[in-house]
Image (cartoon, rainbow, N blue to C red; front, side):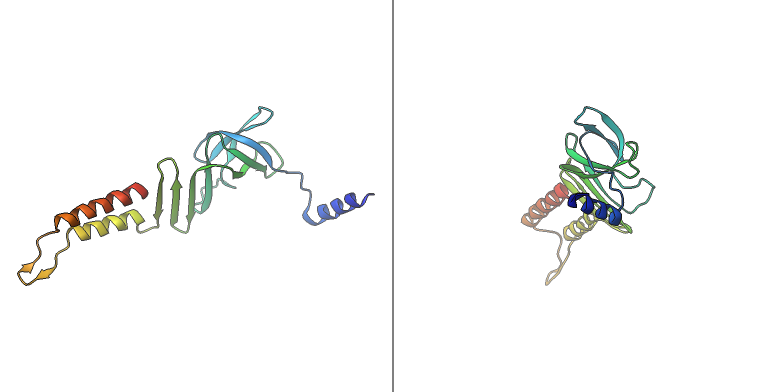
Length: 167
């Protein structure tokens, strides 16, 4: 037995049979939890999972690939009907959910969402904007009656800016 074969046999004894090598393909369609991958041979494989398991769990990290993106998939069981995407070149959306914290990055609308069980970053900025809009301060002549026009203009720019980034 050659030295290479001995090393290969020792590695296989340590990590087990590694017959499930990654499969390279191109994403041709995407659903909420799966995608279809086209192999270089032209074979299209549907129902490739975007998460390791689709079990209804609310804790996950999911990369939603862009159609046309190159991707690596792996079979959990060694069968083509049990594939999960492990990497893609271009993501259209990234979703992360863990213990009530939800972060979503969406390149289709170029916006992000950060929220938990009680609030969202967008809601916080909305409340801040409303607070500033209704701000009253004491003056020697009594409470102020409203914002100055230049402050209102700056507040509108602030609202437009955060609305262009946050969902």
